[in-house]
Image 1 (cartoon, rainbow, N blue to C red):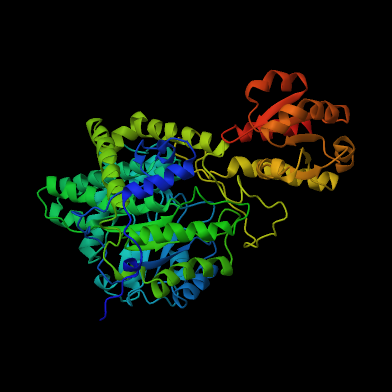
Image 2 (cartoon, rainbow, N blue to C red):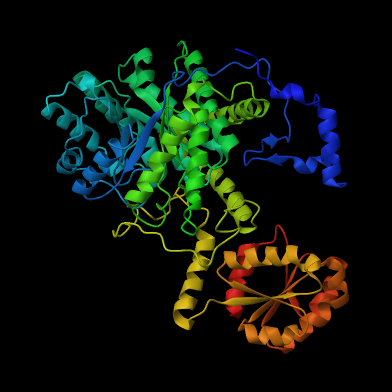
Length: 607
């Protein structure tokens, strides 16, 4: 083939030339302003050199697509069966059966009964390669045995099915906050269940080392990796003590991780779990063999408001997991936070992956991120931090003991608080919710089934959260106000000067207030006090440049207060004029990094 090189038509680029252009764009700001840190304290540089010595990480078979999994959590078995057949006939290669109390149970679940399992799997050819993954909770652990009984009742050889049985007692412990028995007793029961299924001829894997419980509770990437690794090692030890050889036991364990909208960290995380597990294999005198790694797009990133934005989030998460080498990927339907998704939302979830496979051909290259300086650096850094956290868990006596003492929960809680603080200050953005909200968004349809509360809701340090919830509660208040008064609460944006003075800050203020459901009404030109009265607003916000504020801000604030404004805001930092502005009646200053949630919550007290 004739070599085609687009690069040869451009002059060579080097780091010095790039930095010169960056310095010009920064306009005097330090180069360090482009750097950031993850919640694990890992520094992310703006530019990395190519990692020339890197090698691909062994994972999914090169050129073979990952399994396109679809969640089945409809509580009605017949309806669940209809969903399964529709999914399998339209692009899905496997199903994840979500049972009550599982990590993936977000208010809807299939009953863990023999009749429900049998009905839901009517006409499903279990011996035709359909992948089945069980997402089990403490209350639904018997579902594995019931499915095994169904396989034999249908005269299917256990070796001919592709079932991941999903036993995860430590994940249930982490989610529920307590364990019904000491770990040694649970480990013996767990090993007995695994041994019995293996003796029947099922190939497994049987034990799920599931990090999603950490991610959904707000934890960091390294914390998720460390917990999954510590859990897998606990299962490996339990099986060895139960008489299963290490060489066999490691093949009976698989991993589940959350795939987030942070694409680079998601790619690095899925690569890191393989490197970390290979280290465990090495220290166990086992030759490295790729573990099975499953992904599900993250619950905590899902939003109720502007839910179509979840399609983008799900796509990014699925892409990150696929590039990171996941063997199976489940995309959360975009309306899942609103209720039980309908057929349209489920189709979008399936098609997201079909496009990545059939059109983008993401699966064609083995470890496509190998050699990328940024991804290799993130992967190595995650491995280092996760390994330290894993060793800390081991020093405490393992995952069960660290859960008993609350050590894992305490570490996750610190990160969750930091993350929630950043959400409140809009340092971590939720497009469509905390940024760029749409107060006129159309209603999205979901199935008419009530969401059930989790089985255990009290004192759960690792209870799942959605990061958008605080802003959604404010939007709910706005909806109630609309229903009661026929209009949403309003804020009047008093724009001073010309468009060049106020446009940027008026857009900022509009996004901020409407993130809390407070409609922004803009006014500029003369007689702003009169326009404020006509707007029907009770709040006012000055929007302009610092120079215009210095000249007109105080008098404009006084005029608005005389016109009836209960609270006057100023979009921007007050600088040296704060005292004068406050004497004029300006009560709050809005700027990047301000506590948006606190400001919006207080605003409702003035409405």
